[in-house]
Image (cartoon, rainbow over all chains, first blue to last red; front, side, top):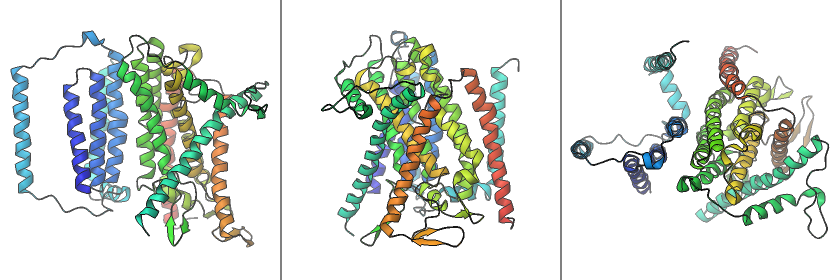
Length: 162
Length: 367
């Protein structure tokens, strides 16, 4: 059952990601991105990482992609003025590189066994919270400061006079 | 027990709560119009009749629904057809999904099996609620953009900015509740509110988190695009906002989404801040009053009182939407943004800080 669900959501995630890069209209790409993010959240939930799954949806699908769509709406390029994308040598090389990357990760995945299925509790809100505020406190705080400086930097760059 | 029994229970739970929410949605469309009428000193809808009965206009929701079904379903010229058709579904589906985690009664034991009166008791509870309700913004944004018209675009932009802004303070305002009851499961939060504070006050969220309650309620109104935060639809400025170009059943899907959001929001407020299914001073075996008195009540009556308590509280908060809608005028856009970022956000952070201090003090043996 878990394997079937894994295959299903994995296929949705990969299929959605392919659609994101191949759709001509940016709005369609953004909607497929939401689909991919949801499928990845489902994969997290399958690995008992429920907290991570919920946060994935809240942060990425609920906030980040909304901002993408916001920009698409504001720019609002008419359909007949969307740039035609052509197949170039660079793009073909990209496809080859992607294929090599998939091959490489498949080889690596065969070499290193997946960690045994975590217990049901390891992905709960309590467990993640405890881990963040004890074992990984320093890393957590440094990340927070980094994000804060990014926010301040964005405001400073966007606004000439504060 | 057999899996058939489990499936039957699951289906029954979904059916009951679905019927409850949709029933309330239908009633609310009537309450809204009738409430508006009485607050403005007029009679309101009272013409729809079946067999000569009008019953104060309760048949109007039925008439409205039929009207929506039979109107022409058109797509405006120049609309992005696919996205235009998708938008109402993006609006309605998350609204329906949010009702899954609200507990509408205490766990009951049938044939030796404990059944939670809740569609799904997820261990991420409130986070699921935020995740799903956050999706509602896509319906609004897509509708506003795909209609290819100025007013809907403005409405969609306003709405998405407003929803993102208030989602922040909404999430932070319930942190206090999570800290006090030490769980994100709504079932455990409801259970925790059965205790008494200082021996006489029910330990309801509103008593332990008064500021959190005010902030959450405000953010809820902003998220549901209700007055005084209904700028996305501000009819005097942008006609009807994001659903201006919609008609017929597609329009009614937006309406339904809005009302389901209201009803589920009311149920969530009742659950987190007003004890959910807890009836004041009612324990499993009967009433236990603060002076040492106790009155035995049969188990079935306890269950009915508790579910009734949840339904009553939900009704009250549904009515509160109408009450506030016809009492407070709409804010200006800059006022909404200033309130969200400069008042609500600092206050909700302060609330978390103070809650943490008090919990630490209690932990060290205070109170």
